[in-house]
Every structure is written in structure tokens, then in C-alpha cells.
Image (spheres, rainbow, N blue to C red):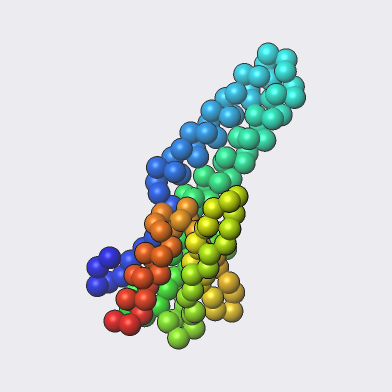
Length: 137
């Protein structure tokens, strides 16, 4: 993070893996369909579609969160929302999922945006600390 601000986005490696899984699943769908296994082709096709949607989201919403001395910007598929520090409330929330404690960053204004480590590419606690430092600078 420098004095001009900071940005957080999904790790490019995870996005790349998503695209690779989509390509492998699509290839498997075609190959399986040509061999006559229609149910297998449908299953691989659904997997390819799901992987494509996830990878495209990770590609299109970069950076997912950005901040500077004036406020934060949250990027979604619907566009980028600019929020001044006076409009935004930041908090960490911890929930239990699949037997693990999961911490997320909640960015709240008139809408609530919940960001985990996959969307941020970093630990939400570290992002919260960085945002707090930017807000008070």
C-alpha cells in the first residue's frame, strides 16, 4: 500500500485455474458427448458453465475493492460504486462454515457488500487494518 491508496482483487492464479478448469470441462464435455455418453457430457457441460461464470467474475471485477484518502470503490458486475469515508461503515464478521471460522469484511453503506479472502486476494483482517489506516490518514 502506498500513499495514493490500495487495491484488492482475486489472486490471478486462482482466476487462471478457474479458466483452465472451464477449458478442461468444456473439452471433456465435447469428448464425452462424441463417445455417446450423453449424461456425462451434460455433467461436464454444467461444470464448464459454472467454472466459466466464476472465472469471468474474477476477471471482470478487478480490482474488487480499492481505497484512498477520500473513500472506497467497490466493483461489481453492475459497475463501480464510489463511497466517501463518511458514507461507509467497515466491520469484520466471523462465522462458522464447514467446521471452520471464516472471517469476512463487511462494507456497509446503503447496501451491504461482504468480501472474503477469495474476493480480496488477502486476509480480510489485513485489509480492514489497511482501510482503517487509510481512513484515519
